[in-house]
Amino acid sequence: IKKKYNNFQKKYNIIIYTKDKELHAIVYSIMIYENYNRPYLIRMFENVKFLFSGEATLGIMQVNTKKIIGDKTSVKIGYKMLRERYLQKKKILIDNEELVNDVISSYNFGDKYLNEVKYIKGILEKI
Image 1 (cartoon, helix red, strand yellow):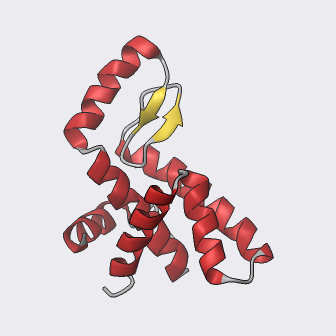
Image 2: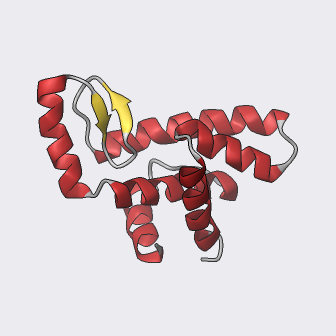
């Protein structure tokens, strides 16, 4: 997890521009989780599949799209979605855990997804 985080931070820190440590940890945790479940080679196959279906979730952040995109574009889209949700809910929700749960669950639902992303986030917070 630490190795992936360092790698991704070098690649995408120009895109993920936030001083908010909570948002930073959420975004990178989701990116690491999504990359683990859809490694680079699988994402390349998904791009080929897209040519036949015309719609898919693509890129490292697995964003829904109707055109072929690469990892950087998926990070831009995914970060924008997460940032907007985070800033919107931060105004309303006082409890930090509720905020984190809401933002992660808005990206992808399910208890397993939420718990595994939060596990990664916990590791990142110790770095």
